Amino acid sequence: MSDATKLLDEMNERSREVFRLVVESYLETGDPVGSRTLTRSLSEKVSAATVRNVMQDLEYLGLLGSPHVSAGRVPTQIGLRLFVDGLLEVGDLAAADREKIDATLASNTADVAGMLDRVGSALSGVTHGASLVLTPKHEAAIRHIEFVSLGHDRALVVIVFADGHVENRLFTPPPGQTPSSMREAANFLNALIEGKTLSEVRRVIQKEIAARRRQIDRLARDMVESGLAVWQSDAEESERLIVRGRSNLLDAADQAEGLERIRNLFDDLERKRDIAEFLDLTEAGEGVRIFIGSENKLFSLSGSSLVVSPYMNSDRKIIGAVGVIGPTRLNYGRIVPIVDYTAQLVGRLISDRG
Image (cartoon, rainbow, N blue to C red; front, side):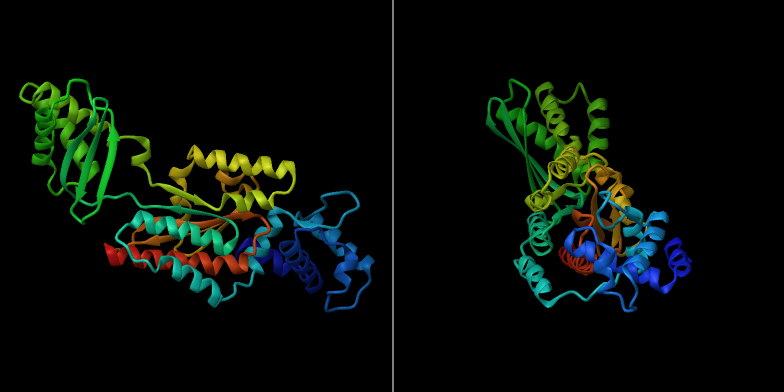
């Protein structure tokens, strides 16, 4: 039996109903709930004084709090957790929401990055929150590499993968490069890369350069090492994070303190703080997970909630995640099926292209 279920079982029927009504009203309006308001909604006819006593007991348990001395009550983070784990009723995905998500993903192009970008925009638009999409690393085998000069201080490395995916990466070549040294560098790489992924190629090339330092022309060697540095950047080592709908969170934060918390959140996202651990959040189970406030250190400063679900490839391996960020008073019952459906849809689309 979970702690949430145990605590709910220990509460009497009246306490559970008062608690549920406070949370549901807060999630809908964002406002504190007073005892007089609750007396009009309770199934049992009791006085406002009786309701106040129940609310005081719930506050003593740490489930409700008073934002101001004379105000009504709002759920605490612990209270929201209890509600989500024990009382939340998750509805079916609305047909209108399903149609909007399907329409966004209908343009079935080969560009997975573009498709995931559209997923982020769709989630943001449907939920009116900010969306997160963690994209998978591209680990297909490489078929061919080419260097293209764009000027004395700019060059392009073109990487063609065995699955047809193509990536272009700009970098600064070493000075003195000639067309022949660039061809030699590409020939050197193409002789080594066939059937290997980028991470495997890095290790092989570093070992080969060390062993054949005298044999390979200095300019070509410098070209290989400069291009290799592009593949080793931090941005390419980890999954890419797509964030859409920031304005939705800023619009919802109508007080200066709220705006500052949201800005802190976006600063953290820009710096990719803890993003390496983001995917780990989803690995405890296949379904949707809900993180409220400080339960996830990435969002602890902003006081936001995260509803997130992993998506998998055809081998049932978790390769990314989709999620929605919003204030703690998210409409969890509506958001959960949207995130769940989107994650499953993305997994199927990526598997079909895989």
